[in-house]
Length: 220
Image (cartoon, rainbow, N blue to C red; front, side):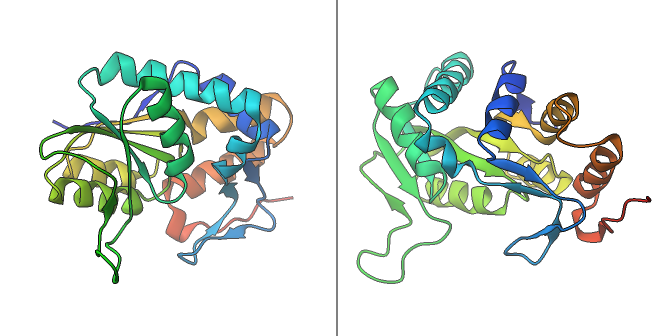
């Protein structure tokens, strides 16, 4: 059975908050370059959320709603380093649960751990991410948790691009993914607020559908 990313009913409110914080920015004419080398008309930096008290509290509330509704058996909150750590800590604190954080790969020195914190074999974990693009870093973190004998109930993110590669990867790993917001909602809200044009929206959607082959051109 294939799983699709489920989006929070509060996604429009989240989109407005992220756009107002400039956590999500669009630029079709001068695209951003990701670490992977991909040229993207979208840049997402949800780390700025932790600096705004009102929005931070609101997003934590939305996280809690999702987790309490869908993952009632959670015993540990895990944040993916580094973007998922601060939100994960705040969520764990609100839920009175232990917190651990997980790297994509184990350290090469010291105790050589991939998962930092205390846990017991078989504990049920919900994983927190700031945003999902290809899903690769989340998948590596989830594998690291499973290698330690932890049971991953699901993954919850602030934002997802909705790339097919990520959906396919999470299906392959049998990971349930919920997100507070996705690119489609973000574009709808941005268009309604005249932050982007219809042409820019269509160009960005074409990027989402084929990021490696996106041309980025808009006819004048």
